[in-house]
Length: 123
Image (cartoon, rainbow, N blue to C red; front, side, top):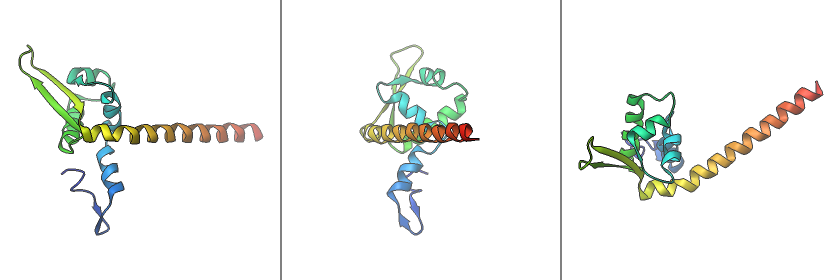
């Protein structure tokens, strides 16, 4: 089921839920970050994701492909066959959103760490 098909909640279509469904998954956000600047082969992606199994990577890539966020390219002129992935035009349009979310997360962490350290000093 694609993110679009899952985007109806509360009896209405919710664009925010659609976006969150696309990004929802343990490895999807980092996969998208890896593909922001250039295409990568499957093996390169796998090596760049310590702790991610081949099966999990394949599932996450398949979901992103079904949601038309990434494109899988197969070049059979290579031995072994070269399989690579890159962002589609829709995927590229997610880049500023992902960067904004990353910035927000960095500020959130910084703010909470400041509060945590100031609370430790007060005690």
